Length: 110
Length: 118
Image (cartoon, rainbow over all chains, first blue to last red):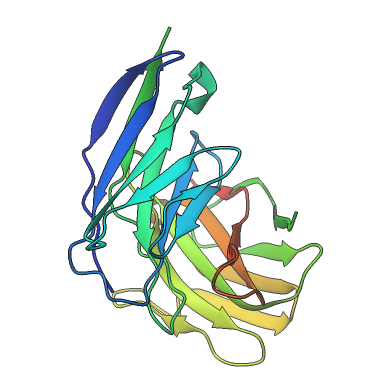
C-alpha cells in the first residue's frame, strides 16, 4: 500500500483558502487518493477522492499532479468549523483497506 | 446518504470483563466492514477487515483472541473486546464498504465508540 506524507499542522485565516498538501510518491497507477477529516471524538468524514483528474464537490477541490505523486486538498473559504485533522489516504489495490497516516491538524483562525 | 451507526457510543467497564460493540450499515448492504482503534492524539489504526460470512483478517500485531469480530449479516458486524484491561481503553471506529463502483465513495465511517476500562 502506498504511504502518504502530510505536514503535521497548518493554520489558516477564516475566509481564506486552505491548501493541504499530501505526498504519495509510491502510488500505483490504479490507486485512488481519498481525503477524510476528523473532528475531535467523531468518526472520519468523507471529503473527496480522485484518480487522475482534478475533482471538485460542494466541500472542496482536489488537485492531483500529473505524475500523481502528490495532491492538494483545497477548502476554498475556510470556516471555524473546518478545524479538524485532515487525512490523505491511498486506497490499497484489491483490499479496499485504508491505511491512515498522521494527517494534518488544520486550525482555522478567526 | 449511506449511514453507519455504532452502539454503544461510549462504555465504561471493569477490568476483566468483555465488551461488545456493534456496527450497523443502516440503509445499504456492506460485504466488508473494517475496525479501527484510535488512541488520544494519534491516528486511526486498522485492526481488522471483516467479511460477511467468513473469518476476519487481522492486521499484524492485533490479537485475534482478544478482539473477536463477527460479521454475521450484510448490515451488522460486532467487535468484542474480551477480558478488557485499562490499556484497551480507546476510541473504536468501524467503517462499511458499500457495493459501489471505484469512482464513487466506497467506505462510510461510524461515529465511534469510546471504551474506558477501569
